[in-house]
Image 1: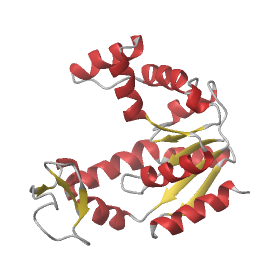
Image 2: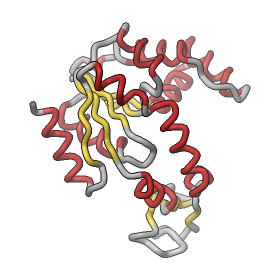
Image 3: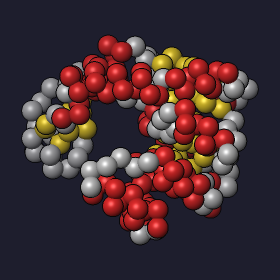
Image 4: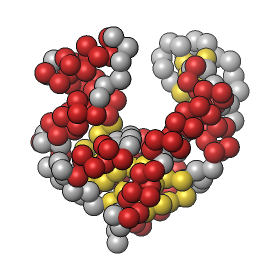
Length: 205
């Protein structure tokens, strides 16, 4: 099974991807993780990406796609894979078609104001890296005793900017995959298990 999860920042793509990947025994592929792995392994593409990142430049599509092609040929992808955060734009989706077929594209839909509350309410531990949310944990310190802090990219103004970028570059993929007959939208404005059940209902068809 070959899947793509679409959805704005804070929609819960990563959380749902882990559950689905475990159930179907397919590889959960995040482009961020993939980039770090290629750089850690010192591959030709990894070195090229590291040079660009070290100069503060964006990694171009051809480098990302080269990494994707390498990644899906690995042993853990023999049963399929799930892309979390890729493709991010139409050009990447078109290029992906030359590398692999896709069975389902799951779009996790969540209202903007809910996304902002989810992300801007997140707090991180400066020591152990644990994550909390102000709606369920109001203490200033982690259970390990270290202070909690809010990441810069979790602040409301930054979150709104991230959502604008998503609307501009990634949301057009929804129409693209609708036309391909691959897109299935699930309501992400629910608890984790309910969203998981909705995704499984689509995949069981």
